[in-house]
Length: 494
Ligand code: GLN
Image: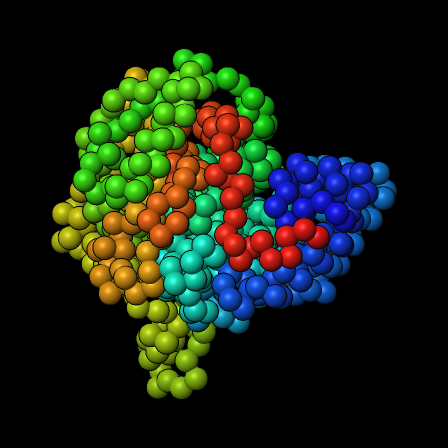
């Protein structure tokens, strides 16, 4: 084991496994040891089970010995704690589910198992995926490995910190309004939210069902493509899963970008974006022009309405989805109560945190008789206008580019007292979810405080292959995605 395995790509790890330079058990042990050493600093993993992980790794080694092969056979991964994992805790970052052990695997988890990937553990997240800083987790905040005084982003903050600190080569995340792209941006990773319906939501705890989508987070676009190959595909257990032929997302990675039309929405380059973010994004666009792409000015005129529309629609769906947590069937139940109604009230009052309660209250209000038309129906109409903006824009360009986040990672407490400030962290990502389109963030430099900056690429419907290609070509010319925080370098050459 002489190669630098902790910073290796999935392809390099797969090659090392295939050549028997390392076994799945050795690889899992390497990452478990790093987790043991560094996780107390970052709080990225919240559930670990060395025995089970090593058993899975031994199984991968046995499958290989029996003649099986595959790009993910023996590759260690972490899963966001929103995915149900049979026999492991699945908490969704909440006290409500702090004791919940799922009797079944989410489709995403089952597919990775089938591919022979090895689960390292479950990753911390904002409670029920509501947040942009990982400060709402019942299990405490996650620290950004680039600066432990700053947030990793959210809600997939544990996922992002784990890869940034090189505690896992790759992980899963979910994105309802930006939760893959914003933490990827803040932690210097590559993360992809696929087109709605490409990845099954079965066994993924629901936040806002019409927006939720799972996706990969890793160091590079190529790694994300390999992971998406395993995650994507029709699932009859998810009624919104798209029924279509399997796609190889690595297929177009090598395609040259000559003549590519990159749309730059004027609304994304306004005063809301930090100067340091703008400098890095502009430099990335210059790199794309060198690669043969042309940039075109476009407009997404209803962008400013995306955050307000989202904060009606997402809480409405959340209030309905979260009604199942009533203390009766599973999850937290209050120890003392007077009658059934009191049991519901106390269990929910104790089990949910403040942000989740805020969303339930907003959602219940906008769905209530007399307000439904004024708020919920109106927001749905705005959602249609936002989706139409993209239809118009993609007549003039092949992909859309801009910042993923208005600023680099902020400090703990900086936005947590003001929900609206926090909500604005997703100003550039939310419209993509409302329109159901694919989007990704990839590292494109560093800004204030030496913190990573992410470039966002948005694709047309089912255009994930295209944006992965566009990201990969950039990563062939630049090395931002290979940079790692100083802390992660400890124990680097093993
Ligand atoms: N930050 C957004 C929210 O709090 C998005 C979260 C997400 O994508 N899961 O709702």
